[in-house]
Image (tube, rainbow, N blue to C red; front, side, top):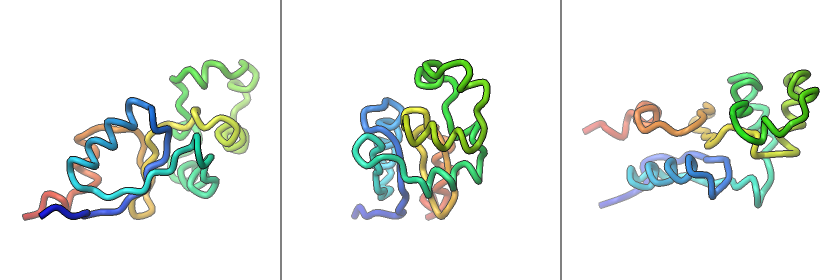
Length: 125
């Protein structure tokens, strides 16, 4: 019998390859989740602030991506927490994804080993 064991929220952009890997892993492991699509629903400001509070803007924004590189030099060079919030609200593609919230903790990216650690009780017998 298959049933949802956990409930989490995933934030990001549906057609992102990393998001697809995360969805596939969660589905295969029967983890229930709610998906918040930045392209359809915009950025959840409360979650953005939570992510920055827990990890700092430097980790929330993907500074290796094309969206970051397309910002003007003066914007990148003067980035700080308040400017990062504004930039992320204006361009959700700047936010590292997937952004996952489980039990009030924010996690970024997808890595199967990391997800296994995030959901440890899934492996209990």
